[in-house]
Length: 329
Image: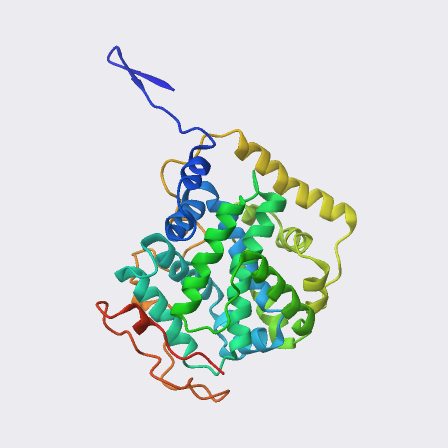
């Protein structure tokens, strides 16, 4: 692309669509997994990763022990926008800067501190971790301009294995396929109806209808679109009617059409961050990761804080293990 300015031609070179895929292929999925994941999230698939991670979190509501707890906190029903923003920004701080960078350590510490106020079972923590690996992989298989390569899937699993270790989650699956098997088995056993979880789901769907560009559409249509992207097991758990085959074909086809357009575009040179997206609205004047999330004054009545010093790692110069606190039993 050329721009004429004072008779001088300035040529701006675009990156080839395969630039980042080739760059990632030259990295080691066992040792460079953080760099690979950062590239996938900020350069290669920023929109898809944001959509699929949001769907991953939403999916966890269908497990009554998770959705019910979120309802009882009131955070996801009364302060839905802030909870959405905080979750996205905490996860981004870890992936953008590195899990064990000062910013990443603050992000992981915030997660551990918040989880430390609740008696969250290990199985639920592990399941949530599984969704963050599996849902983006399956989303990109279906709706990405290309699926993730085996190399990229391995790196993604390694990234979340490391995050799981820093959160002291036990028995984290060893491979991306094992993550998928664990997620599917847990959902088959645990998905079910819970009135509180449905309230969290409804609040989330209402929030999604306010995000641009879908905010230009009627809220009922945005809800139908969202449900058309859900599988039957998820819909059934919330007691939602299944969309018609025509609705699914139309709405899913629209997302696939977007992928075809993306495939024709150059690779993204400048990273795209969640904090820059218009749906993040709680902090127009900026934020500190250490201030994100909730700060209850004492453990909730649902269960005592998990055993151990969940505030470990209060100093950024601590050892990596300082970030972990003993998770729920």
